[in-house]
Structure formats: C-alpha cells, structure tokens
Image: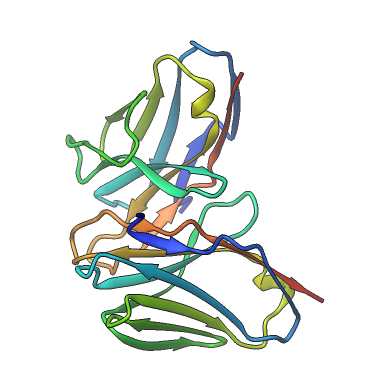
Length: 113
Length: 112
C-alpha cells in the first residue's frame, strides 16, 4: 500500500514551458486534491475532484488545468509556466466517511525560471 | 481577512517544555477542527481532529476548541526534539463538504 504517490519529485522549467504533475492513490478514495504551498501562505487549494469524472476549482486555479483520469489518478497541468508558479505542489486524497483525514503525497518541488 | 489565522512563528522551545499552538477563525459554520504535522520536505499528516467544542487528548497532545471565541489550540506536553515540525490547523464546516481551510502553519523547533 503506497498511499499517495507523486511524480516527479523535482522539476525546473523555463517560463512558457508546459508540464504535467502526476498523482495516484491506491486507497480507493473518491476525492482527490491539488494544493500548492508557499512560505507564509500555508496550503492553498488549486483544484479538487469529489469523484471520478468531476473537477472543481479551488482558491487559486488560474494557470492550471486538471484531469481525473480514473479513480486512482488525478493530474495537474501547467500549460505555460510562470515564475509565480514556483512552489511545492501536494496531491491529497480523502478517506470516505472519516472526519476529513486527508492523505498527502510527498510533494513536487517546482522551480520556474 | 483570512478565514483561518495562524502565527507562522518560528517558535523555538527547550526540550521538555509545554508548547501551545493556536489558530483563530472567522467562519462560525466550522464544525470539524484538525491539526496536521508536517516534517521538513514531507507532506502533512493528520495528528488530531475534534468535532465542535471541547478537548481531546492523545498521549502528549491535547486539542482544544473554543467555538464561542473562535479559537483552537494544540498543546504538546513534555516536548521532544522529534516534535520539531510545522503544525497546520485545518477546518471544515460539515461532514461531506470535503474542502478544508488551512492555516498558514507554525514552524516549531524543540531544542535538546
């Protein structure tokens, strides 16, 4: 049981480049999330998916797109990366029926130059 | 004004001290209150959660909620260097709403 996995762990992009962050969970959770974490800002929700086939915007969705490929996988795409998107990105899933126990992945450290 | 406010610290205390971490919030609809612990370069992990007002104890950790003051606390007794981490509070209005609101996190260091 690997929990929540994310790839890649580190990435450096030039401004304007695109990339996709991958996330997968093996806990059969319905809900999945993408957050970004910046110093002094805490965790900010980018997008979430309450179930397979649905996605909704969070607090900071601009510049990002998501795909809920199936129940296990939830990807985050940066179409044209900007320096303001330099951050640590966390994927999470939510245990159904629990009082909000979110399981987080190890994070992706992204730098946009 | 943010919905959840948390002093980012950093907070540095000697080993064995009692640590108090706090968050205030503005949304009176919040019902579930959580504390996550995040070690350096790792993802957050759920430490404790409480529903509505009151206290909850788990070993050296006590979570306290005062809904009348919109104030929650996490106390760590007999603090250990292994408790050094960032602690984030999180809240949610009702079960099933599925979107947590996080505080900024407080970076805590316990000095041997």
